[in-house]
Image (cartoon, rainbow, N blue to C red):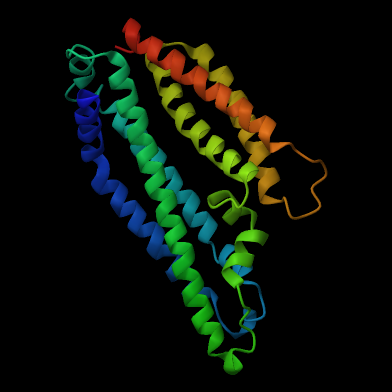
Length: 254
């Protein structure tokens, strides 16, 4: 366990500064976008509507892609330049530790991004509410507007689900994304290209589940049992982890 901790500490320290910069941009960018979007023409709109129409979701997608890029860089940096992948696979420790040090570091990066996004939502709400409160003596300020925004907005409910089904779904979504990215790189390095077939299945399920959750409050044409899809995604994650460890043990990725 101590060796895993040391290896994880090394992995995170290599890219933590970049992740912190992205997280800082995640917090600041919505404030800039909202400051330009909030004016007297939309004071009657709901806060989540202003938040979504200002481009904050697009900004989050950009930073989400940036974190994915850091994960890819973290993995492939072991193959180019220092060729440290050979050192990692020959040091006196179980190869499972090498696998999990990468996987856990990826989860840490994404959790930091999600935390930064939630912080930006709370700060953005305070900024919007303070501006609306100045108009006509706060006539258009709604009580419990932040709580209602999380209930009505599909995007915000993915970030901070309000029920057990939503919590399990959100966890399975982000776990599937992280595990799929890592497994895709392992398949590419080991030339197990058939591994992209289950990844394609995960992408299809993610697209369906995310689309459903974004439009859950609207008249969606068909009900989806999120628990079933969450279980399927978790099963895919378990397969990716099992086969990924197996590739490490066989030395197939070197």
